[in-house]
Image (cartoon, rainbow, N blue to C red; front, side, top):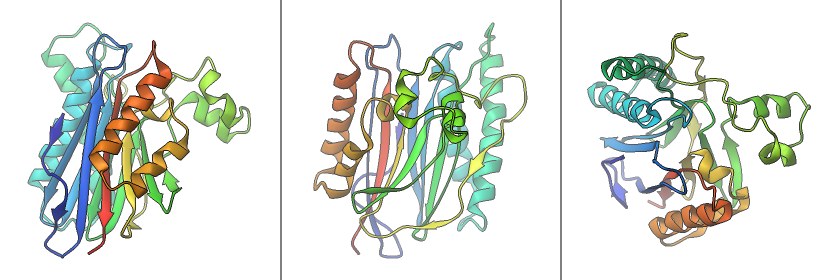
Amino acid sequence: MVSLIGAPEKWKDGMHCETASTSRQGDRDYNQDRYGVARRDSTVMLLLADGLGGSAHGELAAQAFIDSMLEQFSESTLPLTNPPDFLVQGIEHAHHDVVAAGKQQQLTSESLTTGVACLLQDQVACWAHVGDSRLYLLRDQRVVLRTEDHSMVEEMIQRGELEESERETSPLRNFVTRVLGGKTGPPEVSVSGEIPVLPGDVLLLCSDGLWSALPETCLFDLCSTTALDQTVQELASQAEQASTPCSDNITLTVLRMLEN
């Protein structure tokens, strides 16, 4: 885990934000989730990765993704002129770093991970992802936008072959269709446009250990709370309790915009 800024943080342009993060092992033998938060000038990067539990050393892949993206961010020239391109190219580069990390450890099988990255620059957000770790934009107690999972179940729901209510009971619920790492080259990266963010908006990045365990309405507490870190911890606890004794790794990192 990496966290390089605290809460609240005042930017040079007078805008305020606060961040909070947590990561829990749940009932698994290892925690293969990783997150990262970094700020330079008036630009913030949020990152989250969920190493695939069925692959060799998913935690290695997840950490390699975080390290790669943070390094590229630290070396970039700010302000970024094209955040969507930066994210797509950065994730493609991170894919090769994940592969290289596995080779360096001489693993006998592929080391794989999901990845989601968000940039917030001058009150405008952009995000990109691979896999089923999610980003939510929350505003006024509702979900304004969220990423679409790269998974068999998501594709079936989009085609009308499966109801949303059947997501968690489908035998295909754990089949991810795009990952970082592996032998097939960089996956196709899904990227958003540039989205203005408003005071009170919340950007939430989370692994499936959170979103699969709780209804979306629980996430709205992040908009109204006066103690963001406490609410983040409470959400992780609720997800853990809801899915015990088979709870997954549970990780979330949150940025909330504050009034100037």
